[in-house]
Length: 193
Image 1: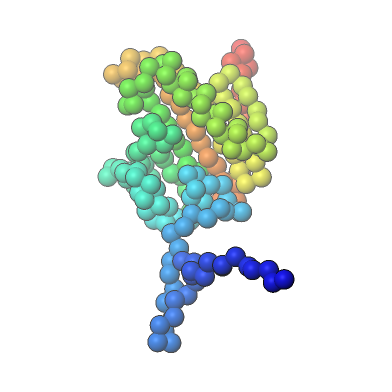
Image 2 (image 1 turned 45 degrees about the vertical axis):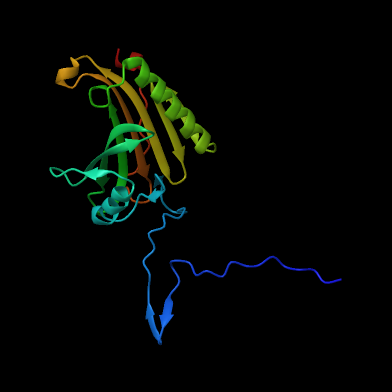
């Protein structure tokens, strides 16, 4: 009795060299493969320069600000948001990505923002099930071996016309690219007293 093997997909990957008439051309991979050494943001490793990172965000339909190269706007978690990319001053590589949701920009009510925050945190806790989770007065910190995600929700007591309303901030920080890496300290409101 002869066992048959399933056919093997022999298509070359984008990272393999393509040979033609003894000339070899390398194909640059735009694939956002899982990174084992850096935190990921939307499938993109938090690494490289702003010039490397920006096109990858633009591929995900974000628009780069004409006023600040490190600022982008677009849909994150199906909601209009602002993305800010930061670089480490010592090694000049991307070390963090911050997502901000504003009630004045996305038109959500305070209750809708709270519900959005709760859905995002629930999703992050599910995705990073092995993360150490710390909670304090609306702040949630998920720390992993590659870095951390700091989640905050707060209300600015100004009118919406002057930048007030409810804000959500998610900050993804890569440990390897942050020269003075440390976990943020979560304070309770009573710590101020």
